Length: 461
Image (cartoon, rainbow, N blue to C red; front, side, top):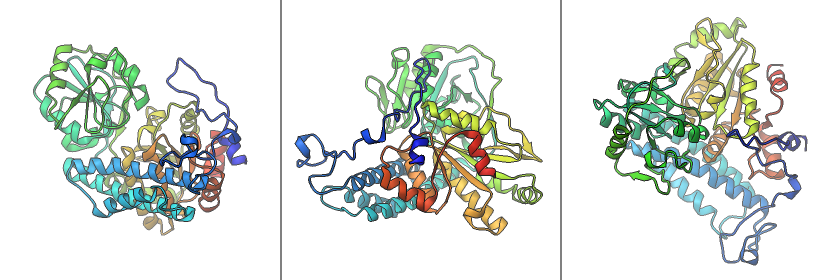
């Protein structure tokens, strides 16, 4: 129960801050055992909450939900790969089988659903690798790039989401039109791809993680393009100048079909110039596997000399929960002989920090979007070969933040690799009951985040 006690702490909500209370300050006993209303047998016609009328046990119901979340995450990466013409029949077949297994009266075996979750982890690894291949073969191998944050004078378009395809088409269509294009949130890594950064009117970044968009979009009078998930229902201040494309759609917001961004361009020109503002904050992104591994001999030397004590991957989906402040404090308190790898929008908790370097090896390495977790995996596997050890013997710790379904897919990918001792936050996934927690703790030594200083002592001790 100590595991649960560390997760279900009380937090204060600040209504003037986009960060919110995690909602987990209820007693565990007050939570529903399960909730299922997918068939006409459902209890009282509203939902089974203790045990399914069909006989489904609560743990099975939760494991089905978990599998669905992981497969939803896989589908996001698969969609963006398909945008660029890349597909995988094995992954498609798994998704068909996985979705089918959650239908009424198909599978009641909890052990099988754990196995399928691990299989989903393997399929997600395969899908992330496919998407990485698509990005590299289409836009080139990422290279470290400094990205200024702030506006420059001129009309602008702000692109948010995850779709490199949509951003590439937008850059092509705006070239020579006097429009500056900015990235937001998970499109920051686009600046590292040679075939995207070649466009001189891709001028920088506005804002940070997905949940700051209402403030950021209201602040800058530019046309806004949402290219994927992580769009929020818009405020009136910017609703009429916002557009969506791909899977993203919002009520009352014009949706762009077939990557024809003419309406977005027209709106940007109509809105006129942004004013120049100081761009003192500079973020660095674009560390691909080849860049990191080019440092392999130096990394080996520094580790053997004791100058690098540990690599810690701190990243994942950022969350507006108050508990997520943990990640800022955690990185701030790390000693100078620790190298931090990061990815996804969790990086915004600390990516403005100047951590310096250790004899030319940067102490803060941003490998990209959430799907670029595959880069971190590739680097870890390469380090096992470099040091001649197993994955769990590396001087490497993973400290994950999670928000939504893609993070569930990535967590199961890490577990499928049999990685032990992962720290997870900002809260425990709602689908995990005591039975599921027990499996994760006993088999994978999964740990909740706690006090940053104490966690660091435990990791480095």
